[in-house]
Amino acid sequence: MNYLAHIYLSGSSIDLRFGNFIADSVPGKKYMDYSGSIQEGIILHRKIDSFTDQHSIFRAHKKLLFEDHGHYSAVLIDMFYDHFLASLWHQYHEQTLEQFSLDFYNQIELQQDLLPSKLKLAFPYMRKKNWLLQYKSLEGLEDILGQMERRTKFKSNFKASISNLKTHYAIYENGFCVFFEEMQKFVSS
Image (cartoon, rainbow, N blue to C red; front, side, top):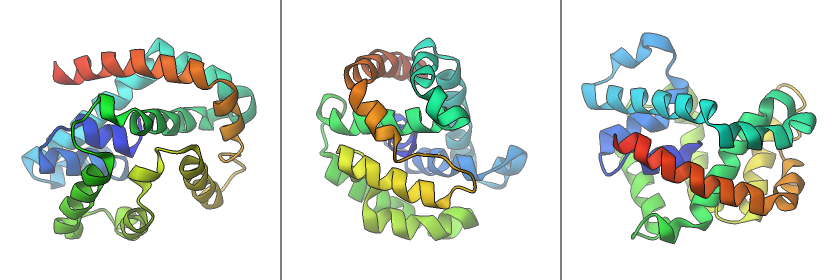
């Protein structure tokens, strides 16, 4: 799961969302440097990632990409899943994705001084380009993947993964719907 899914799965708690958002930039026990509710968000993020990595649908989807993208397959499936969540947003949330995104960016801005340094640099760009909303279209997803590709040290072919997504779109979408229903049950428990 990528940013949109992690934020969505945090519910309405601002601190839980914040913790879930920053978790990938908080190594090991560094999460203990934050307040209790932000810590809970970081821990939730880690549990979501663990559930995702072990799920049979996620693993099957990674195999569809592995030949061309190797260990980056997991990252790409995370991005694909955010695309499906965004494109099917009306099925999951009563608020528009546009308003949800704006609310989230405003919440993060209020706590910007708590962002890890990596996210302090990335967040203004994320907001300006509205990544959460961009996930909704294939063109937007391709743009984000292109930006990520330029930042990787090794050849990742992130942008080229769009052709795989288009080829197997129904497989990915149907799998995501089943997977995400199970994910929501997991998080609510």
